[in-house]
View 1 (cartoon, rainbow, N blue to C red):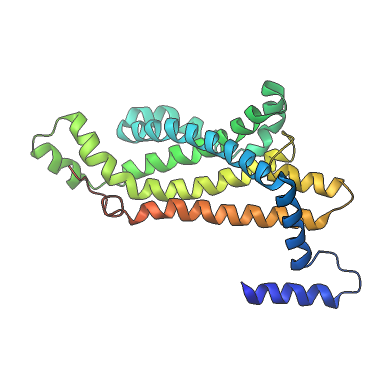
View 2: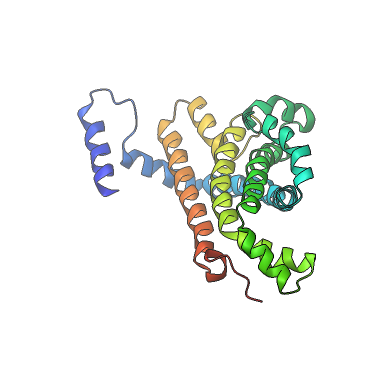
Length: 240
C-alpha cells in the first residue's frame, strides 16, 4: 500500500497538468470533509441504506431459497422466475424505483434489496442441493422429526456456503448503494462523488469519496469473514 501511494504521488508530480489529485490533496479533502461533518453524515447515510436493504433481503431470501431447495416442486415452479429476473441489473430498476418511491432512502433501499435478494436466494438453493444425502439419512435414522432435520442438519450444513454468499452479496449491495446515491438520493458517498464533481470539479473530494468507499467495503468484508472462523459454521455442524 505504501509503495502504491508513493507511485501515485510521483506520477502526479511528473505530470505538467495532472488529471487526478495526488494522495496529499486527497488526504486534505478527507480532512476537510471530516471537519465539516459531511464525511460522517454521508458514511452513516450509506451504511443505513445498505443495512436495511441487505437485512431485509437476507431475512426473506435465505428462508425462501432453503425452502425452494428443500422442496423440489417449489424450485421447479419458482426457479424460472428467479433466473429471468437475476440477469437484470439493479440499476435498470432506478427509474421504476424513483417512480414508485420518489427520491429518497426508500428508493435506494429497494434497489439494494433487489440486488441482494436474488443472489442470496440462489445461494441458499444451491447450498441445500449440495448437502450429502448421508447427512439427511443419518438424521432420519436417528429418529429426528422433519423439523429437527431442518434445524439440526439442514441449517448447519448450509451455513458455510451461506456465509460465502453473504460476503459476495454484501459487496454487491455496497456497489449498488453508491450507484443509487448518484441518481436516487441527495446524501451518501455516491452523492458526495457526483456533488463534488459538479461543484467546481473538486476531484480531490471525488477521489476521497472513492477511498472511503473502498475502505468501508474492506471493513464490511472483514466483518463477514470473521463469521467463517466460528467452528460450528466453518465445519457445518450443529452444537446441539
